[in-house]
Length: 233
Image (cartoon, rainbow, N blue to C red; front, side, top):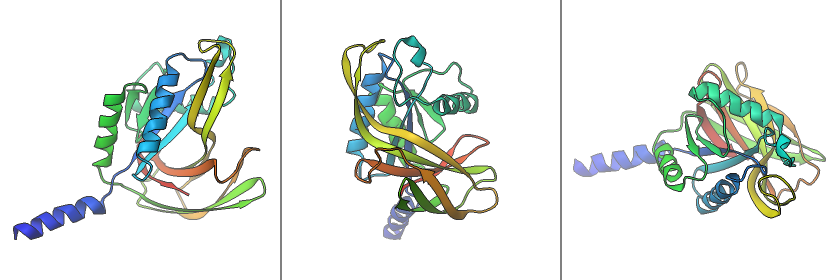
């Protein structure tokens, strides 16, 4: 009997395999961001075969401080403000990491971040997601199929550049060469209220190639901000 119980508990854990989606808000204009960028790069490398995913959003509110981040995007700043409302935490700051849309961390604090990943991996996945991508010239067709979503859910599809170096000339990081990881270049939203399967078309950056980029899709509850499931295409 004991053996059966142990067997069942192991089975149920494997069955509800958790995930950790780390969303980093960063900027080339912020001197406390490079340590967070480096840490997230290490985590990405270390957990490559696990259910851990890293997305780095370069916000634009540092762009007025003397250096414009080439990867910055006002949409990512808006996304960070949305999280401030979901989490009830103002003001926004960099480097901020949000795990599974539920908890925020200072992006360079390694111990608390690793504990957050462990905690996220121990919880069951609420939505299952299947993605298949095919490229046509400057765009990508992504077939998606989602199960187990909440009422007000969206599928978000991120085009991610795995790595880039930047030679920063001015601002808080003047005269430094910075390495960035998992840079979100485009984030597209698909409404899941009516249809849970279909095809989305994503425009690709000019330097896109399958080796240096990847597509990460995730389902988010737009009432609470919680991430319900995530998958690489």
